[in-house]
Image (cartoon, rainbow, N blue to C red; front, side, top):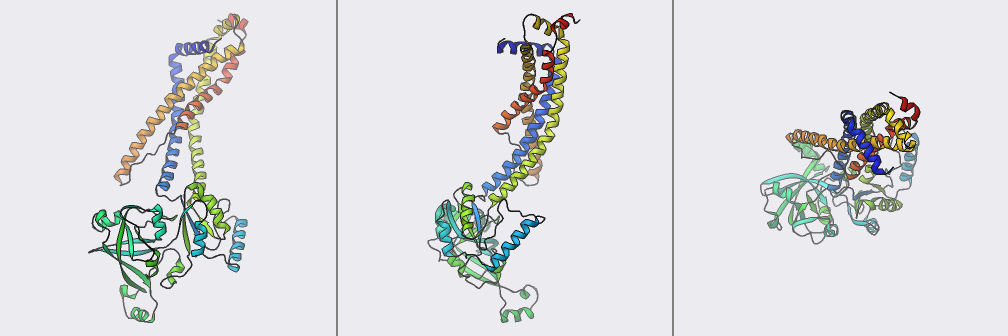
Length: 461
């Protein structure tokens, strides 16, 4: 028999029992729809999280610090892992007895020469009050060398990067400029802005003032003000490092060194003298692409420095995503299992009803294989229809749920998002899986049909 004969026989037999075929196929449709909808939800959550990190440009950064300690994949961070705890403790003791290299200008130059490194700059942020006219706002200031600024990290709407690392010049985000009621971005370069910082002051005069003062004057802080000139307006400065801290102002290192300030890089910076020193507590490294993170990390750690990158955490997140997907698949498989039992029931009933027909087919020369293939084509057709309509059902249900969730979230001020994702491999995989399950469910009925004795079948009423 030709394939067209098998298809014609299977289609005709299913059409004869339209109601039974419809009910059996409906069970497959519901099972596949539930499985697709749940898996699409898991994929949508993963895509939203990953895209958000990529949008914030956090995967291309590595944080480098002195001491040679890092938490890389494969190194346990579980407090119950006593072996890992002992190894970290022994390593910490070794670090104290044999301090590693220092993060200074020479170290930055060595890191800058590594293949795949796009920019290297000290990780220095500090809080400040920005005043423009009568408007004053609190923000974080990022210290960025002129070389890194000119490398293309900053997308300017107007103006240019500062010419060197020394002048009291800054780049401000258009968002902060708008909140300060400043001029249009095109007219902002040349605008004078006042930057006010806080610093710890334990001098004798300040201690005496604290002793005889109350309220805010009793705190060990002093306020310093500095005049800066806007040279550029950035459309989006971003996070400028692996730490999720937004900075809306960029200044050169020379100007930052002349300022008395409280740094957010390390607690020890609170006690550092004005102007800092030659060493940095942390350095940010931007690589060309996320694929360069691991090789660059390895070379930096070979220099004796510790590293941290969100790409390391992404690997752990993927394990969590996999566990979530397995849970959703397990729930969806319940519907598929019920649908497969329905297929078995339908095929067995079809064999009993067509017992005499099978005997006639064998009497005129049909082999056991021919009989098996006819019934397998029937079960496969049920799986194909169930997969196609189940995929459509999952898409429609996901669309409705997505709209309901967005309606509720928008009322809370959250942006609209697609919580379901239907990649092409999920669509094709759902159809193929439905056909496979149907064929597996039809194995027992087809083998039973092939074992029918034609003599007995012809005598069957």
